[in-house]
Image (cartoon, rainbow, N blue to C red; front, side, top):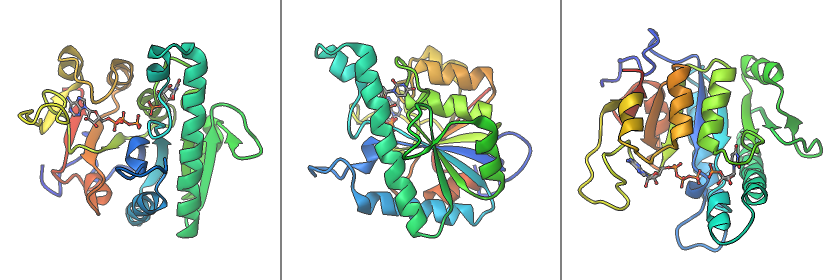
Length: 249
Ligand SMILES: Nc1ncnc2c1ncn2[C@@H]1O[C@H](COP(=O)(O)OP(=O)(O)OP(=O)(O)O)[C@@H](O)[C@H]1O
Ligand SMILES: O=c1ccn([C@@H]2O[C@H](COP(=O)(O)O)[C@@H](O)[C@H]2O)c(=O)[nH]1
């Protein structure tokens, strides 16, 4: 794709509203004991500030893998639903860290959680979230879907459908979707674009199948890209060739 191509397939050059999915794991500095690196969160927040200048409405879902993944704890003997609720609480910590950094940079932010915790955040109310976005505020959706056995990728797919986002921008440690996990296979080959159907039938693990299916059913394209590179979020919004577009085909 060139700088001018349509990243959403929706007929406009720049999306009007996006859901940005941030990896929780990416908030931790390699080798550090801290689960959250304020420096990394700051760098992500700077990119979000830069992207907001494009006039795009941005809602965010942050993962929790820097603290806790329910399935890992469950594989080690903990009851799955409880482990998953712990994972959802982890995403709230990440949401608050991001809110704090964005506010330091002058951005108005509201965190809305799927599990009520009114002392720290608003409850998720779809119409209120849309109202915030229309006023130029960033909305961060914390606590996942509020349900165990799901992931924050599925949360991003669900919220994108609910708020009618044009595209999901999935920021990861890798620069797109590969034919196998590039972290495990150095010979993995990257796709410029791939259909939902093919991503699901090849069982590509960059997102879970529930998230892919929900995006496919609701026609929400996903741009998978590496946000560690400064400026990449803005490039993704403008349709630059920096990742893999997963689309209806
Ligand atoms: N076919 C594939 N193509 C690209 N990445 C893949 C593929 N299969 C597995 N992966 C892995 O998926 C990861 C991307 O997922 P994501 O950003 O959600 O990471 P995560 O660690 O699960 O995040 P979180 O902390 O939010 O749980 C990459 O780190 C990559 O190694
Ligand atoms: O809807 C949801 C979302 C998340 N969880 C739990 O939280 C952790 C962290 O999320 P990641 O997507 O892995 O970053 C996840 O492993 C689940 O345990 C959930 O239960 N429901």
